[in-house]
Each structure stands twice: as structure tokens, then as C-alpha cells.
Length: 144
Ligand code: DQA
Image 1 (cartoon, rainbow, N blue to C red):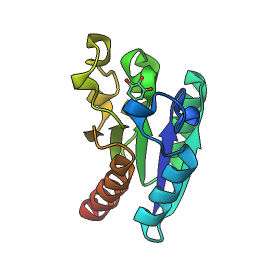
Image 2: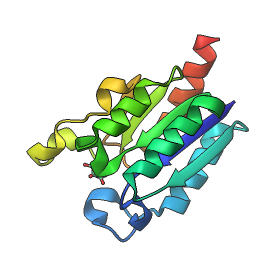
Image 3: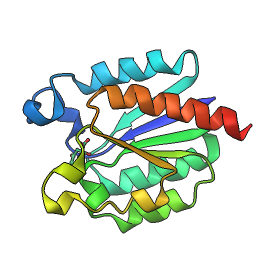
Image 4: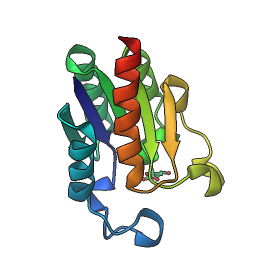
């Protein structure tokens, strides 16, 4: 199976960006975690700062992915376009956040992506990516 892992704006700066919130691991470290957790399944791991590029990648996943994991970062709080794109998918969609947005500023409490997600993982730091890959593999297996 193929698991696509999409990362939104500013996540390229992980490791140096507000480490008290997001930790010291880089996005490359997190990609390595995903590959390991996937245990042989294909992982396509990407990051962009651009909303439309995320829309393009979600549309691409329609054709080739068996599950999609997305950390939409700040676009989760703002983007109807991401939500609409995700709604076109018929594969498991896992929304992921390193932090738990519900414990943070009020503007982070709403996510447009959640209503298009199969499930949400938040608050476990980089380990959330391992959990998300496991959730993706389980969802793929249980759908048959
Ligand atoms: C984030 C949480 C968002 O609120 C924030 O805008 C991010 C990262 C997280 O992984 O905790 O950029 O998605």
C-alpha cells in the first residue's frame, strides 16, 4: 500500500521553530519515523508552504494513495479549499497535529479539515506521525 503524508506551511522549519511547542526533531527526522512505522509500505512524504500545492497533492492522492495523512498546519484553521479537496477522497484521511490545538489559542480551536477526516491525532509531538501511520495501515487493512 501507499501512504501519502502531506505537511503544510512552516513545518519545513521544525527543529528550530518554537521548539518548546513543536520539539527539536526536524521534518527529515519525522519522515524517517514514518518510513520505519510503515514497515515496508510505500511512504510519499511532502511539505509545502503553499495552499494550492496541497490541493494539487490531495487531488493526486485520489489516483494513487491508499491512505492520506495531513498536517495542514495553519491552513487547517483557514482553508475551505483543503476541506473540499479532502472531501473528494474515498480513502482513509488522518488529520495530524504535533501540538494539541484545543489547548492553545482560540483561533486554533476550529479545523476545517476535521470534518473531512476519518480521524484526528493531536498532541503527541513527532510520535503522532508514527501513530498516524499505524492508524493508516489499520484503516487500510480493516477496509479490506
Ligand atoms: C500544527 C498546529 C497548528 O495550529 C499550527 O498552525 C501549525 C502546526 C501542529 O502540528 O501542532 O503550524 O498543525
